[in-house]
Length: 182
Image 1 (cartoon, one colour):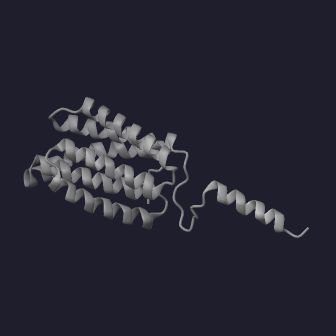
Image 2 (cartoon, rainbow, N blue to C red; image 1 turned 135 degrees about the horizontal axis):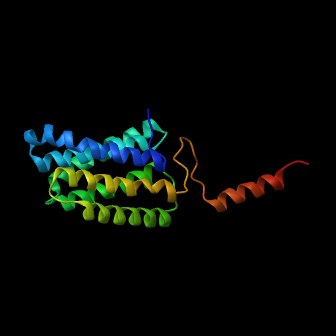
Image 3 (cartoon, helix red, strand yellow; image 1 turned 30 degrees about the vertical axis):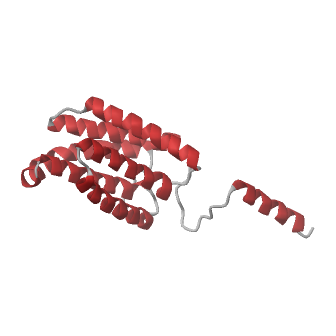
């Protein structure tokens, strides 16, 4: 399976997701209505993006299913497209920095807030009430999200990776050195 866990691959995903909006809108839009078609497409893109973010395919798939369920609930609770988009951005942040990549909490919050703010502002700047502008807004948002891999500097989640704080790791190392037979 193709992964988009680098800047370049994620940028390609952004372009493909943006290009997919036009046929989706033309096929699904008349059936469900334009607003519902947009919401469903954003959920599909979000789930596909999450699945491709991590090499741990099973974990990423579970996270994607959970996020998709939460996003479907969010579509019924959101009173506007703005609320929906903010909620989806929050779900992406949680999936990426809490479940797929390990970060210290302060750095994760700062990075995600910056990426979401810049991404949403760029998408807003590109948006207009046309299909092409919606596609451009999606591309702009996803392109900014690609920058996660430029700034993250954190390893991807690995099965069995122990979450030991640095002090505990140093303490264990020191004990191993002191108790070693020479």
